[in-house]
Image (cartoon, rainbow, N blue to C red; front, side):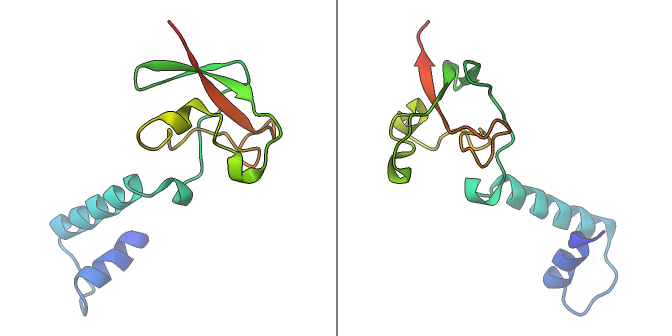
Amino acid sequence: MGNITTVLKEMYPGRDSYTDEEVALARRAMLAALRMAPRSMRLPSIFVPIGGEYVYGGLKYRCVKRPNVHHRDCCLGCAFNALKGPCPPAIQCSSFDRRDRTFVWFERVDG
């Protein structure tokens, strides 16, 4: 059970055995916490090659190589920066995340 046991010990101090229902509850709690983890807690997993397209919120975006800008301005030219809300949480845009070691932005594709 691994981490589930740790959660169960917190939920039910002083006990060493748990019902199937309690185990299921702890498992659901852990999964909910993982889904809600902020971007900084998860590694981006979606690689879009330069020139490739990505659909987000029903709109199409093209991956382009980011110009050499100061790290404070790294998101300013990205179309996702203009959205009201966070950018796609799993998208790889940093050279530290991408297998091609390139910083990228995304541009909105009309049509």
